[in-house]
Image (cartoon, rainbow, N blue to C red):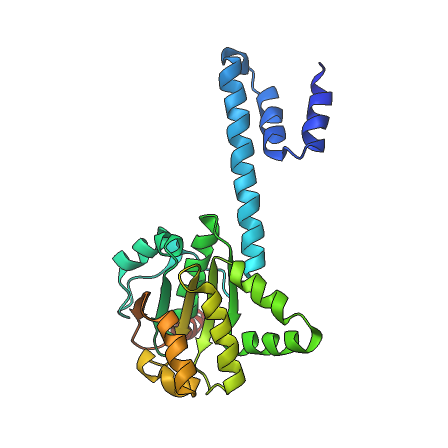
Amino acid sequence: MLVHPILDKLQTLRFFGMLTALEEQMKMPDIGNLSFEDRFGLLVDREAADRQNRRFKTRLRKAKLRQNACIEDIDFRHQRGLDKSLIMQLASGQWIKEANNVIIIGPTGVGKTYLACALAHKACQLDYSAIYFRLPRLLQQLDIAKGDGRYAKMLKTVAKTHLLVIDDWGLKKLIKEQSHDLLEIFEDRHRLRSVLITSQLPVDHWHEIIGNPTLADAILDRLVHNAYRINLKGDSMRKKKSKLTKNKNFEKH
């Protein structure tokens, strides 16, 4: 069989990794020294890696993370209470496999959102699905979904996602309907899927922002008891970066 028909068929079958690898092999003068099994093994390995990479890109696009963050770029030098050993443990993804949660608490600017997005990015690499919401936007979308008949579908979509990231929890007090919506989400995920929450508000004050005591007890029971807690502290990293930028600009002038 001629080579070009093989390439065409690989293209038609969407074996893009294998197609690229075969084209590369055709340009290697000493490729004939390898056995058929070795050459075919290289093609299969490239196809598997290509499919894994495409799945990762798709999951990352659907996650809609707020920041382009990754575990490798986390700065552990700043004194902000960040336990590197815990972060590396979470980076293994075992907590998602076990359907546990993560709660990140700290003042504004200490890197809560970045850390959350980095863990979600790693989850996507590990073949888990993820989705990111700021709490105000999530509540808004749930309200809109009720109006246009998509509420049940949205709950189902969120329930199927391995990792739900909720950023900016507790910026203002919830009304009863909002608390009930969140309970529906957390009930669907309890012991089945993971939740990652960031908040400026210590967990001890979450009862107050949820409002209704019964709903608060139910929500916290599903979130807190099987959660890893990360308590960040220190000055805003945004301010530090801003000062460094200003100093560099001053030095240039």
